[in-house]
Length: 534
Image (cartoon, rainbow, N blue to C red; front, side, top):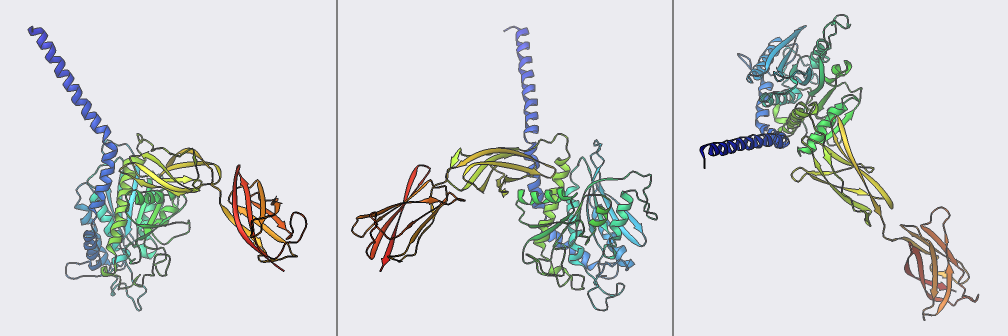
């Protein structure tokens, strides 16, 4: 082999090897994008621990100052407020990428922690997770906000603890959009913290209520966490939305099922529910939801027993179901991660879905199957029955049981995600097997001078009815033709006057009645005994 030929050969090998290496890298990056997202969501779930949440709640409950445990976070108690604000700010600052600032207004303080967007991102979208830190125990007789305790472990130590834990975990990632965590003050005094924050964000003059020349912030969605942990009856979370923010509630519901978190979700869509800090956001046209154990914690409701410790000095950590708090924190964590990663991404690919049906079936309840491919949480419902499908993320298949009507059934599988849906349709014909619904011979026994009615009803249309009567010896007594009900062809009738084909009265005894109908060309026969008396 010549030196020139050998060099050319080596050059081709090296070029091919480099091309193959780059191709493998590109294929690995693009091919694993969806799987990487899904595995991150699953991994994030494992990072939320009940013990860490409990430790944060106890720290908030005790609110230990330089010399003593204050055991209150009342807005009127300046020392307690300053101390808890310091604790929350320091907790945020343990994550080096989070920028922390305070809003101070009229003796009330908000702590605003910002996870900046990716340096190369031009997005102006803002997502918020918030919770109020202040407490009160107004259901205690003679409660004094300056001298009495209000530990507020559940209301709202649980919300603050969940928010701090989520901030710690998400600060490890860079997103296209800005994420803010806000510890709100003065909630118990009329949502003072959220009202002030919203007025600043919406560029509203706080003295006149008029718009200013400042730019209104583009807040896309707000997750407000308020009282998450008093429920030993079920793992219930109530999600409060208005019409505009329903998509945020839908995102939470979809994520709960997608990741099999196991929460019972009660969705309350009501413009007038004003029990927490979401309301000022609604009033300024921002999308916001509140997650809470109950919008009416002072009374029983489905899957919830009234909270006797609500707004009392007995609201302590030993009353809190931290497994429930963990699940709510997990839900918000994976939902916000999905929204920040995918929902507003310009290159997002919609889900792909198939629906597999047999051409015909005899089953009135059919198990339908199909496949899906999605890089983000979805759910699937089958219309028109609105049956919710069970998804297997590992095999990317789904199943659902749906009722069918006789004849052609057009089914539609809809894959829903927070801001949209895709669908696919297919049809199946129900060739329903014949079955008797009712067979009536009345009266039975009958008198020889009376009239006996034969009435039949089937599950499908009948085209003919004939009753053939034999005596106990097998001798033919009478053939009788039937008539259809005028309104329902599944119902037919005929009558017998207890006479033979020759008009003679039959003798008392037992007679065998062969009741035959024709449906779709097939004959079906039912046997019934009839007793004739004198």
